[in-house]
Structure formats: C-alpha cells, structure tokens
Length: 197
Image (cartoon, one colour):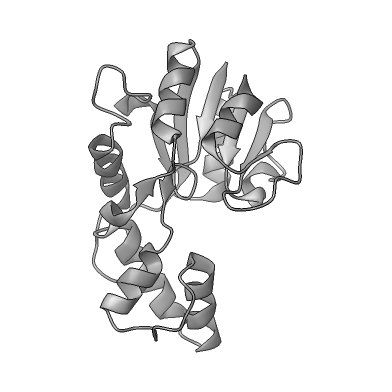
C-alpha cells in the first residue's frame, strides 16, 4: 500500500508551542488558552492577524524544535514500513514565511524529521526522496494523486474533502483529543495504524 502522511499537526505536535513562544515574546497575556486555535483567536480578536502570521513563521521556522512527535508516531510508521508499505510525507508548507525572518521552512522541517528519527537512519520510515513540501493546497492534493496514494492521513478536513482529492484514496482524519465520531477518524497513531491495516 502507498500511504501519504501530512506533517504539521499530524506527525509534529505543536501543542502549547504557539502559546509558549507568544508568551516569551510578550505578545499575549497569560490567561489566553494554550491551544493553537485559542492563540490564533486572540490575535484575530485583537485585529492583529499579521502578528499571528509572524508567530506561525517563528514556530514553523526557528522554534520548530519545540514541537514533539505525537505519541507512537515513529513506532507506528516504522511498523508500516517494515510491513512493506511505501510511505510519503506530503505537506502544504511554503518555503519562507510571509512576514518575519526568511527561515527556510522546508529545511527546518527536514532537520526536525532527522533529529526525531523519521529520516536519516536505516530503519527510518522516510527517505529524503519521499519528502514533498508543496507551496499550495492544490499542489499538495495533486502530489497525493501523482504518488498514487492508497491512503492519506491529515489533520485538515479541507485536504481530504478537496475537489481534486483522488477518489480511490482512503481518507483518514487525524484529530487527537477529539471523540472518535467518524469511521475514518483517528485520535491517535495506534488508531491510524488499525485503520490502515
């Protein structure tokens, strides 16, 4: 089976990172919730969307190492690879931030993947040649199709419901911390593995 996997918020867990970085920069008050969506809502409510955009650039760039892999992600992907499945990482990620320092997001993500054992070792689930970072959502969906993915795991419904998403590709919505409501929804990586095999 050819399995495609998203990166941000599917492999890399940013829980608390946006809050911590924004607090270190003194951009938000302490009482704001710690989730990414709560931090984003604060900036939007304060009519500071450019500041939110800049914060994303900082987190996905020079502060990416604060993110951790979701529990069991690495072991699950290694198991899938050992079972003979082909794994591709397919991400929608611009190369550089819109606002702020010109940090190469693609290189930052590759460094994170190597540092956390997802590439660069004999039993790593991905090879460098199986990492695809796409500048737009449309390019990401087209890449999923070009790679002939039999299944794709993503945290965003808009990817899985995109009008050009391949019809024969199994969609798995990764929603950690949510109640499992849908048949092809997973709240952790063990559930992802069971949905795939």
